[in-house]
Image (cartoon, rainbow, N blue to C red; front, side, top):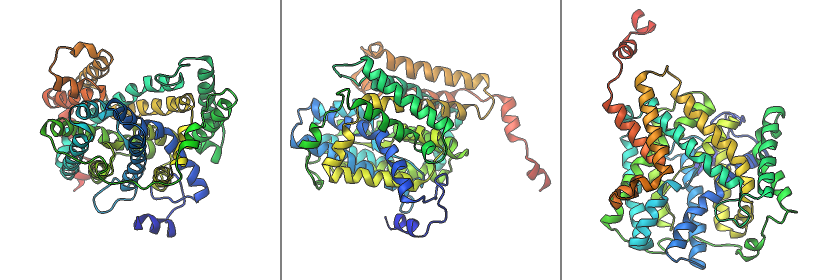
Length: 456
């Protein structure tokens, strides 16, 4: 935190497009809120789903939601303003991961919240150690792998965007004309401002679009203010509220999921640097991001939170706006922490209709998809790379769309592979990249000395 305050007092740059830039607070606040609004409901939804399925309600559910907000904010600060080797020092937004949802549900049903939180702590420590050794392991994550993972993330999120635009899962008015109207208005406002506006209106296009959508939704009766009335004014997170237990049956699948999400984090960070800064991520940035991913989850488990990881929604926002200032994202992180400590503040954000979020999300998710394509096309596509990309997408997107295809597999296989196309695509891409030999002609080109090497 001291580094954050030092950078504010003595900024080397005030440009929001500079990763170390510290723009004026009046400019950074709305830009940071864009990041919060993009991930807020998804961040708390995982805790609500898991808690609801195992019978958690009332004050206990409030603690789960509160924890989700606080740990997301703390995890984000770890990434934006790292201490030592922890963190990417990039605008990486952290949150409770949907990728862990199937694993979380099965562990919670079998071992309860204490078993889930214990597995999260051990898995987080494992992930942090993995991050320390990421540099020698990076050879397994070339562009063909990270690009495929990012592309799969983008494609897998597109149905989520459409679902939100139509009103969200379980909405009684799902697919109604008013949901589509509000969502499309947000979409067109964001596009118009981004293409034709300048200055603040352009960089804050997503926030402005969501405000316009909110104002339209208000007279249509789409906003319920009850959560604001019922929320308290102040609450301090209680560590180990649900207790903690360590069960091998819970820890092993959790560790496997942390390995997969580490690759997803590598893909997200690569997408941020390529989409926002036009360069590849460094070993230090990738290693730091995975370490923070793990330690953030350790912190989460202590304060009753579920596994956290980088949020792909916000990766797409960086690619769309080109705003690389980590200070901007840190401002959003502080707001998240305050939303956890001041429940009424979080409740205000929670009243945003799903269709409003969906209208903005479609643009963000499309940018993630395009960033994946950018990574994959940095080099000419060979027959080998086409096979790797194609089969990874076939199994990743295909199997996740037809989960019944694995109906007769052992439960542990369904646990790991049945919930996320990203997991499957990631593993297929890694395995095929190892198994399929590289084209000899391409290897010879890679081994040719550069002009500088010839002169030396």
